[in-house]
Image 1 (cartoon, rainbow, N blue to C red):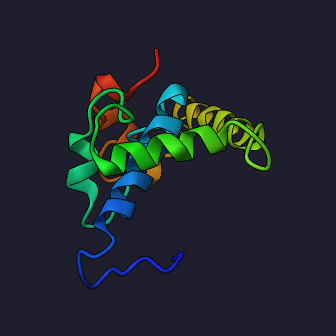
Image 2: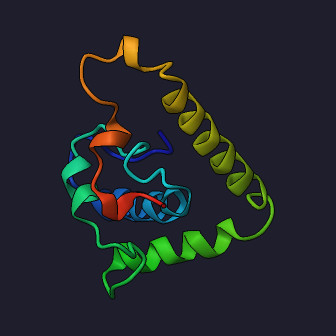
Length: 119
């Protein structure tokens, strides 16, 4: 858990920065909603703007630092390759109906807002 305190709000800025970065990395692949957090911070994530790296808040500034780091080694090109592959797997599973028998309701990527989807 990288040492984040999950019992107080002491590290909320760091958590928010991580979520902003997560949203910015996954959105270009149409995965922003499918890979959304399932924690108490989901509300925060869902309220992020279309460009989650915008803003003068500390979490936005830290997220931009993370995004800059993600563009080079050791993260690049591996993050992009992995996210591209994940998007392909989800698209194939959805197209093949492979997830339908296991779902009692539509998959999260179907229910996601269109603003998070890549056409």
